Amino acid sequence: MRALVYDGQLRLVGDYPRPVPPPEEALVRLKLAGICNTDLEIVRGYMGFRGVLGHEFVGVVEECADGSLVGQRVVGEINCYCGECPTCRAGAPTHCANRTTLGIWGRDGAFADYLSLPVANLHTVPEAVSDEAAVFVEPLAAALEILEQVQVKPTDRVVVLGDGKLGLLVAQVLGLTGCDLVVGGRHEEKLAILQRRGIDARLADELPTEKADVVVDCTGHPSGFAAARGWVKPRGTLALKSTFHGNVEVNLSTLVVDEITLIGSRCGPFAPALRLLERGLVDVESLISATYPLDEGLAAFEQAQEKGTLKVLLEMG
Amino acid sequence: MRALVYDGQLRLVGDYPRPVPPPEEALVRLKLAGICNTDLEIVRGYMGFRGVLGHEFVGVVEECADGSLVGQRVVGEINCYCGECPTCRAGAPTHCANRTTLGIWGRDGAFADYLSLPVANLHTVPEAVSDEAAVFVEPLAAALEILEQVQVKPTDRVVVLGDGKLGLLVAQVLGLTGCDLVVGGRHEEKLAILQRRGIDARLADELPTEKADVVVDCTGHPSGFAAARGWVKPRGTLALKSTFHGNVEVNLSTLVVDEITLIGSRCGPFAPALRLLERGLVDVESLISATYPLDEGLAAFEQAQEKGTLKVLLEMG
Image (cartoon, rainbow over all chains, first blue to last red; front, side, top):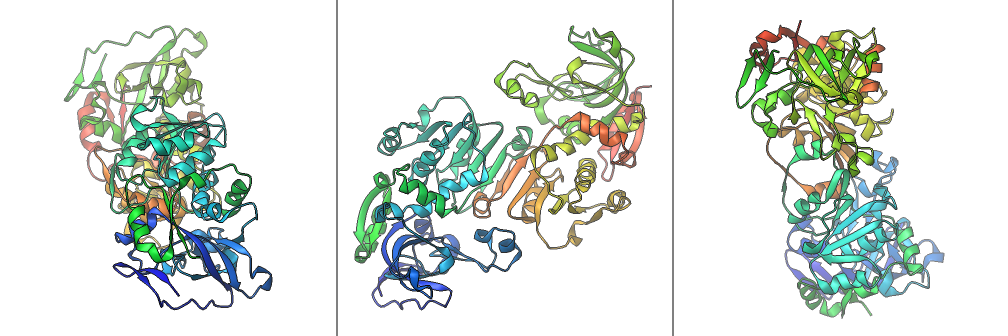
């Protein structure tokens, strides 16, 4: 099969071996996949991953022990867990110490004709959700993870920093709580996507000065932390969604004095993401900058790395 | 009156002006006061404070608009708030932006014959609580603050790092929850205070390898953060009690991947601290290393700075 492989260099391979699913997994024929910032980071060396990239996808089940799934359109949770370690048994399988992660850690990903994933990871996609929307379930779930971790009250003042793909999803999800939300970004055309939905989205240097109960750093940059920290009220919460290589200098004593809560936030729940998309409560299609056939995967990566680009999709067709 | 003053240099002053309380404050004649690590940090330049040091005390009300308080033995919350700003109105007066803090910020402290504090800050001390115990109410309240912020479950595995004054109080308070607690420190004689109460307290390099749901850094050192971070399970909580000058390098991405919660923790509630002391559930008197008359305050500070010293008290007598 065709596959976009990273082995120290990104290359399109024509005869990559098609996965052979073990009994508890399903073979999924891919339809559409999205390029995420994490993919760009991997190509820069993050996680030391080698193999087929890609973890945002929609596809159709082609082989599966459960015959009723064959032919179904599915999306899939990316963390594959053992189910037996203390972390799994404590109900946190996305943190399983023995996990593999689709296209990120120990498991080939979705930029290919086929992938294999445990049946337990798959979610069928309702008819009302298009392929172009379904491919956003994984990052939308990551945005929803914040609400799994932090109680955002309708009366809370909330600041989201970053108008990249994840920032735009986080802002839309948090905006549904009725909270007093303002989003700070750097790109007027990206902020306009939120403004069209009635969300107060501004260039970062035009943000109002009032501090917030909850701040979310979606900047993806080390410098985002200090900016985000500056918006947090005493006893407020700063949710961290950015991953990047290297450390950041933090004044821990001011976190103590102001009793700030920092909380790291990664993968989230798929079912509510599908519900929001089915009800049309989140606009994801405005986030698509371009769609490339898999055969032009290298060009797709090039565009994805250009400043101002939002989501670039790969179509397996 | 006599007062131990820091004005760039620590000195004992014999004729410091006695405070004249405004109508909403009380004049307290001091009996006993404790030297805290924060006092030692201030003498090294922390907070830029100038004035009478000291914020842990027990004394007797000598003048007060409310006559029923006169003659009562009291302890006092150290943050004096405006009551009118949004932070105060939101129920977080210890974070009032207009606050003064006894002996730390904008208000003379307790290493003197008299202090003045708002009546609202005072708590009368039950007869069963000795002066030597009451002087620990302020740091014991700071230990309890962790339980105001974090739900420590009886089934949680908890690690406390640091066997200084605050660490010993935090360990005792968390141990009362029934959690699976282990304390790591550097001083066998300090750890023995906990061991005598049935708490598993060990030299830091003899801690079991199992990670914890809740970790508390009471080391007081920048290096404590990395050590404490290493004990936190995915989705676990790291409570920060250490304040010190300067920044620490933090790998924020691993906080995101492991979805760790960091929470800064400062001053806490006095009423439950008094209840625990009244019921004899916390041993504070074993923490007293020495008691000096106020006149020997400089010698007291010298001893407080010596390695291995726990609480040094000043007696106004």
